[in-house]
Image (tube, rainbow, N blue to C red; front, side, top):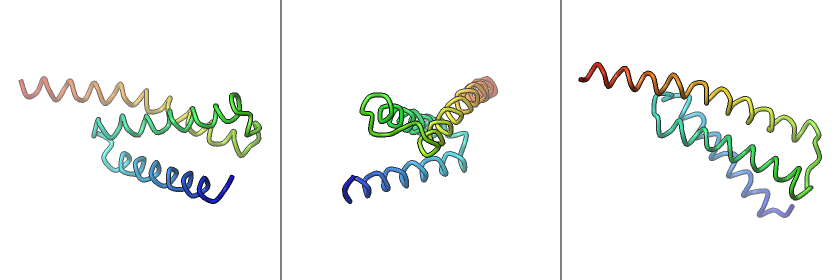
Length: 96
């Protein structure tokens, strides 16, 4: 890894954490919720590809931790997405 790659990964990590914090503040914002969910899918795909496709990382605790965080976050957000959809439907019924 050279300095440019390290800084790029650092900026990506900062950007995704800002998106996730904004979603935590405004969890009912459907667009932001979907973008946040997508960041977890990207993180999961990135770490899985490094382990299984490119073989540049081993399944150590340093790699397992982000895999577990991304996996559990995706599951939790998909469950939460159902409540977000139900809430949107109930608000539409109240308006009509």
